[in-house]
Amino acid sequence: MISIRPIAGADEESRCAGMMAATDPWVTLSRGYDQCLSSIRNREREVYVAADAAAVRGLIILSMTGAFAGYIQTICVDAEWRGAGLGTQLLDWAEERIFRRWPNVFLCVSSFNGRARALYERRGYELVGELRDYLVDGYSELLMRKTIGPLQGFVPKQ
Ligand SMILES: CC(C)(COP(=O)(O)OP(=O)(O)OC[C@H]1O[C@@H](n2cnc3c(N)ncnc32)[C@H](O)[C@@H]1OP(=O)(O)O)[C@@H](O)C(=O)NCCC(=O)NCCS
Image (cartoon, rainbow, N blue to C red; front, side, top):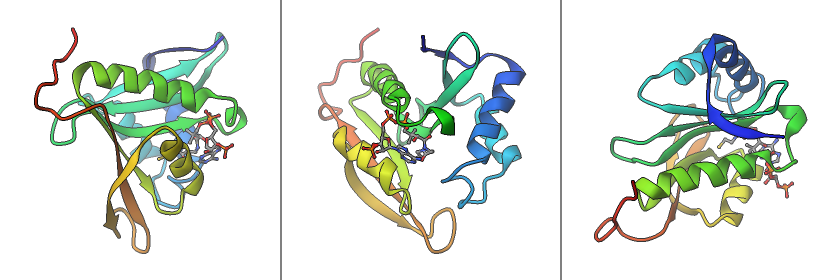
């Protein structure tokens, strides 16, 4: 059975960094293992994993402060586990966490990642804008937002 919990320890950090570095979009974006590991180790972020009794199968990184508070920085599921609902489970969990604190969830999807974009659109994310040549030349990052209302009048839950 899969549970979602904070990442624990160096072994899980390196497994998650390896999972990211081995796959698109990070391959096309030239984000190698070391860069993936530093984003996982960034203490300004919250990192959660989807794991069963044997191993970590996916991760999600959240930014809960700053200009776009409630930003999903990274979501990745082990290639062998994709298409089985784990990404949806991680997104459900992250949205529940973020919507307790903020009325918006933000994320970016690379212009070449049509399948991930379709997943977000099905879940109610809308395109906010296009950051052209933002991470690498020739591709855009598409900023998307899912909202439950304006900041004014929003009361965070404890
Ligand atoms: C995107 C991702 C997290 C979704 O997790 P998942 O467990 O495969 O997703 P679910 O089983 O809950 O939902 C399936 C949907 O995910 C998307 N998806 C599946 N495989 C994917 C892949 N290799 N790359 C991107 N999106 C994918 C599709 O929209 C799919 O729906 P479809 O089968 O109707 O096309 C996962 O596929 C992944 O890690 N992909 C590579 C990394 C990535 O693209 N991350 C998103 C960066 S913005």
